[in-house]
Image (cartoon, rainbow, N blue to C red; front, side, top):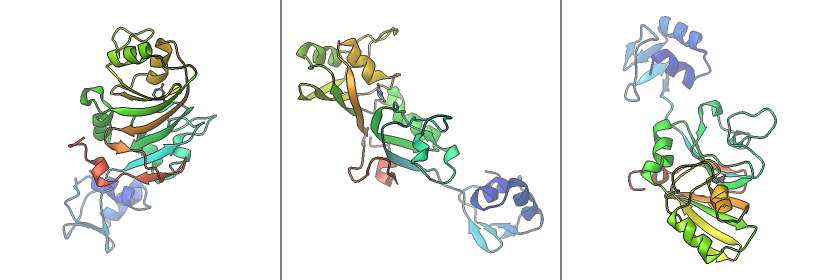
Length: 231
Ligand code: URA
């Protein structure tokens, strides 16, 4: 990253104040006074501004227990967003890894690491998403079988990938899917003649919603949760 960008990200300085500080000789890189803001630095360089060590911000990873009634967008004119609950600095730099509908609750992950979120959510990597689903009608053995085989959703040309269905009671199931198509769970249930009346995401891959998080509360992901190599 450019030195002036690093300095302004890590301090209260604007980009132009940061450039000025660098030109004035207030910043050293590995013990040498920096000359220009355009110089590139990495996490391995030691950057010091007026005696204070500055480090490049590391990527950030959060889980939120999403409540009902907020949308998975960065901004919305009329409705609360998940970032009205995830009140962390530089929220505008975060994105949601796997959106949830306004009326869905549960595990929502936000990060500023685009490669990581792609790996977590891309169907190619087949990380399973686990949902608790409340249904309007009884789940039939035929519907369960269809969901597990793969079904054609309205307006699509490809079958859904096989799902796993655990029946908890006649109108409550746990659904495991590896894709993230638009309104996928609701459309899958509609396709088998049922209707979702309550939807809650419990897990994405090896990342489980922390049972200690109240609705609307968040925490950082742990290093084990961030590590996708074993997921
Ligand atoms: N499937 C849906 O239909 N809605 C969600 O919010 C998530 C998955």
